[in-house]
Length: 269
Image 1 (cartoon, one colour):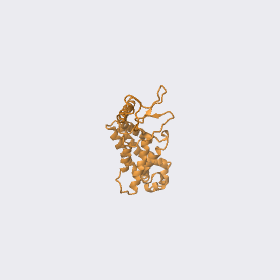
Image 2: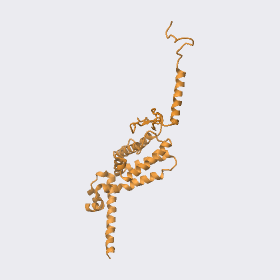
Image 3: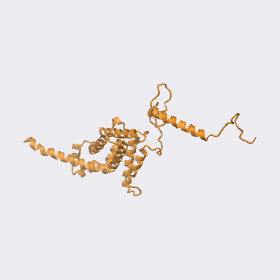
Image 4: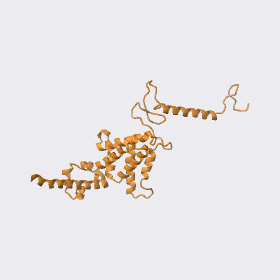
């Protein structure tokens, strides 16, 4: 009998928790982490005490309200890790994340915060998402679709910035450009295209240098000589480029000396 009497209480608790989560998702989506707990309780039709019984803090409620969305992004990225057309997959996934998250202030806040702290300090769902996104990035770079001089931190930064711009333009009711224009510009900036402005390279360590051809990291030479290229392929490309330059300069260079004597006079004798 005792267990039968406690069942409705557990059912009520589950119902109240679901109501609080639903209200929190809606409120956080509109206002982000700044929404008061009292507003969430009002939307859920429960008291503030009920909210605190299920979630000890607003941060805990915030995490619970957005974790399923981040996990969904992560699972999708993992499913795409072995897909064909790595470049197309990467850009479509990135655009989808921006499109969906830009409508949700909570997701924007969560992804922005995760990019501002050390990776080891980030909550596990955000770490998993970053890892899955990194796999797609590396595959796209290996396929030659994404410029090689960027890393995961660069992608996360431009992704968060693009979310903010898309959200701002949508909120301002901008009519000068279609939705997704900022996303298209972001993707264009990441593509491996010679017309894209080359980024200045910043060494991660005191002894790290970048390849003069592809801007990738260069391993220090065993001989101690300053390294210039990441491998034989880039070294060969640089050699061919120098040979072309020598041939072109030789074809354009005027004769500097007479056939049988010193340099010709430049004026009338």
